[in-house]
Image (cartoon, rainbow, N blue to C red; front, side, top):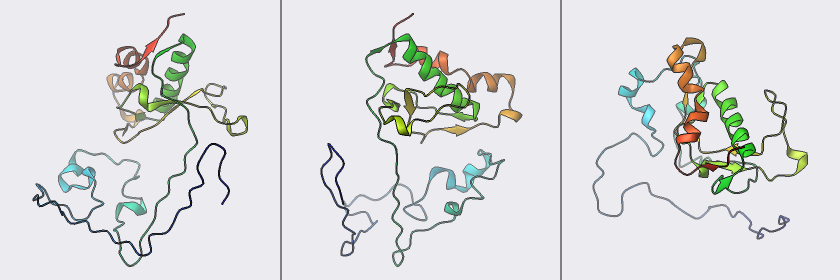
Length: 185
């Protein structure tokens, strides 16, 4: 396996002889129980009355009913593009416009990010060959948003005017979010 420039040559060694126990070994008694180590908060039966799955993404997903199997382990690998640094420090007004445009693209899909911070907005420093032109804005955005673990899907066709404004108020949130600093034009 060839190493990428600037990265150590690390080979993945399968865990053939390793075992892992999901049992508490530190002597503490767990304060709640769950059916498996893969339990997520929205899997609780009571959560279903508060969570809307109008498009069927949760119920239609094969991962919704997936359970870990020691006899047939699944190794998940997440492949992402290599990104640069966070949007911290003082940035230009053009950077702010681009970050707002990226959040606008996300909101236009009905996704509320809900974890807006400079450390979840990373610069795109990839090669020109990997650049994707934004269909809505006709440009290549200089920023990428990560960390969607707190995000929510909003059905934009079935929301109130207030709800729609909440989804599309990313610029206001960017202005009031701690950590971001942009110069004015």
